[in-house]
View 1 (cartoon, rainbow, N blue to C red):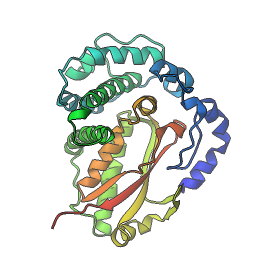
View 2: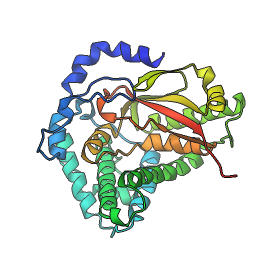
View 3: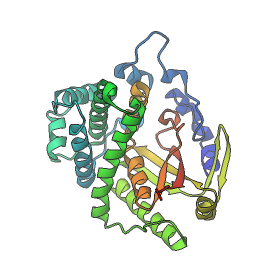
Length: 323
């Protein structure tokens, strides 16, 4: 079903969405409910955001698969430790994890949860709210470390934060590609290579579903109909490869139902302007391995979607190589 039809079908759910402070919109628009923002002069806090924008669909936790938990630990922890100016003190992450679970999920955190994530101990299995909290705590810490080091950086802070998310995604994809034995084409040149790409993406999404990263569904579509500020995007699935070759830019839609880190992504976006994008950076790295630059559009904002239909509009370009 085309994106516009899927969104139109959600009209009956608008009242419930509005009650959560989120405005349903097409990818790329900037509609944000006033409840997603603090009043002028007020400082945003996690506790205040959790009260203003609760996530009732996430209060009943579900189990995370051990491979997902391991791969995320092996991706996040080394990149966090490698940040310049990071003494490796886990206590702020422990404290942030506890505070997050108390504020967002109204329950006490399991003892030594952050330590278990670092050492990859999954007995009992990691739960959805725990992974959400850990992701928030490590990325909040990383973004704060980068902010403290901004005077030494050669790039703007927002670029440094995005590069951190990309490095985590690259590590995660490396582990996932080995686990799934992905065989990618070197380039997108013809229908056969495009079919191999789609097959690889489908296997990645199947892994994410089976391991609990998305609770209900995930799909990456090349059939696009969406509205942006600079005009409509209409692209039949069969036109993707031709558009990429002739026009230099093609589009896709990444759709998720109840991604496990949606609450922390929304709160991080509110607090620092950047979110984790675990699965998006993973697929971004997959495209990089086939010679393309791919990402959600720059004006994507995770705050305006209902949990069962988070939609990212993506731009895909061929990578320009020197020479």
